[in-house]
Image (tube, rainbow, N blue to C red; front, side, top):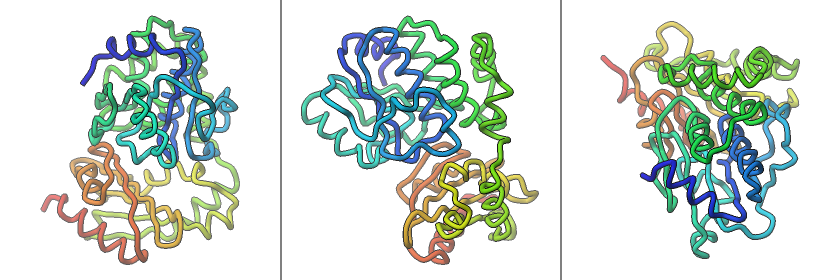
Length: 322
């Protein structure tokens, strides 16, 4: 692995930078990408931010989203991926990543997932509560002072990926960074409300419909919710509205592993896994080509719903204590 100083030196030598996020981006991906983009602006380094997906509805309040594009415009001499564990998670931008590699364009990977494959020329991967913690350190290494604009992006990532400071990988460093960001003038109450408390009537309706179908497996130690395309269409919502749904089954007494199945297409499900105390869901997701963190991970599964549930319950059963 490379050091942040080595990576900052590579960045400072660039004339134009493309910053890529993973598909179906969350607050940590946007926070990482947009804070770095602002730092590069202050360094007078041309840059663009790219992601294949539409901006999720729960993040549309962030500033400068008009800077985000679905594909790079023009040439660049450095490509940086943020919060992305492997090239395939870039979605349609995977082809652009390999095109850059073929053209000998330098690539940088800054991430916090334990499942990261170290796929770039320069890799900084440190497991922590949110990749925005790594990004704050990189911005420091670049010699750029974190202002309120950057702090708002970083706080978004820190808040979302730490589960509002509730996950077991949250420690002194996360709280110290939150304090530092708050000193710039970040409205902590506002971001907490927008990311964790705000409800639209449509989201409330989808939440009720989803939780009414909650199912238990493995003697109540695994709980599962299914978010169907039909229900999202009925409620007029998108994927962004489902952020945090998986936390409800996880908080039920006796449940060790919570599973959220999001129907993406016919017989295709995006799987989100969470564990409460001991189960390693990164390893569970890894059995299906996914990954993430010990307590939070994901993968994609194909097949009929009951077939998918059978595969998951068997995999989870291997990681439950007797």
